[in-house]
Length: 199
View 1 (cartoon, helix red, strand yellow):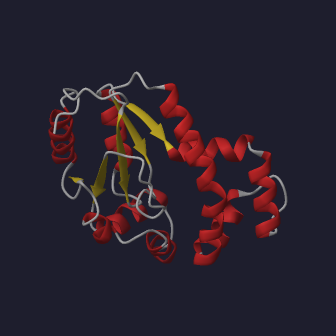
View 2 (cartoon, one colour):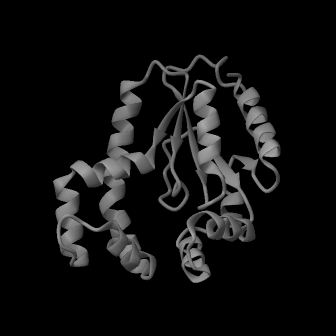
View 3 (cartoon, helix red, strand yellow):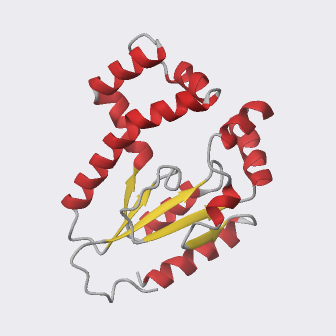
């Protein structure tokens, strides 16, 4: 699967995704350490909330929240109501996609760019050459969430349920990095993927 031997006129774009608490951040960190450029969609969203007045005003009106937006209040609303979550995504995603396009254009000299996008399949993002899923079972997601976030089981299940079922993503991905064992096993999976890329 080596992509560096291909005479591309543009970077090879990898969409990296996973469910909440599947270990995607650990994979991203390793890929970055290997020298790959990462476009972090969550970081883009965070910057939009900080600097995009239009987005903040839209969210304030839509969800009847005062400015500046309290993310905890917003989170409570959208994670308990799928329609509100969908509406929020409709506001944010076009802005995120536009910023990803800009960053890709700025980095056309790169051989590979990894687009880290938790909702890759949910939003049907197709501007990629390869989709990669970091996989853990739903039970493992729940266990890790409860351990690291000190939240109630009900809240953790609600957060998991707000995303596409992880087993559904398993059948949609071009490549799967399994994270349902030890950290050393995950490292082995990541190294195997990096070798296949020819980095």
